[in-house]
Length: 318
Image 1 (cartoon, helix red, strand yellow):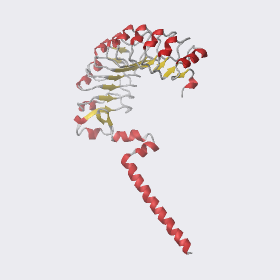
Image 2 (tube, helix red, strand yellow):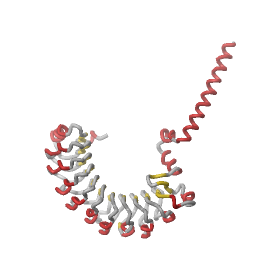
Image 3 (cartoon, rainbow, N blue to C red):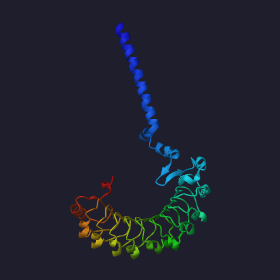
Image 4 (tube, one colour):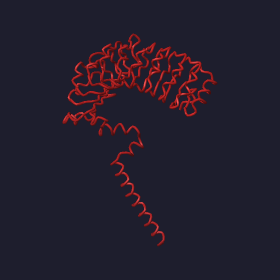
């Protein structure tokens, strides 16, 4: 009987101590919120709505708009993506020091002409909206460095884009069939990243050689049939994606792309690699699935590039 009472008392003590331990763990988790991210990835977005920040500093969102308006000058970023908007949110102009605006994944049809009032604006993300024209409202933002406008049914892109001298990164894609990318874009000699996809491009302008600082070039999902020799002069390029085009050959000049880390030529009617592909010693990934390359050619590339992951078939991709 005494033993039963002893063990019962001991069991109660263990339960109490376990309860205290769990409480302490919960309190610690509430402090750093990492447990939320582990148990439910979606909770990260929830947390960011209330503790928002970016590389520029504080972020205003629809969730904290009222609070942010108490001291608008300290906010450097505005994120109104996926907010069901049909018009540009005019509240954004109440924050005079914004350097970044993200209004992606809405249904905005027109950007305001007064966008250039935001004198410090460096990044503008308007992916997946309903814009039909790329004109002065964007071009007049003189400090804009990053522009993402992919997934808009653009019918026209102004040739004035060539005046955006501060631009370093641009993303365009999924435009209307009657829209063309102006050649003036390729005169922006300080560009470091270009992504133009689903844009009905039939050629790469020879003026690409002027982009001496270019690091990443993605021209996938177009109708390009030839790679000009001028592209092979871009010795700083590390990422080159030409997938889903009509390219039949690559030049022996590919050996000059000595810093290339990724090369994508998948879904092209390629039949052979130049011998010089073995010179790409820094190449980590070569994606060449769904081409006309025979298995022997792909195996030869693997032998020439023993440190490169060669994706020769869709089953190689994880």
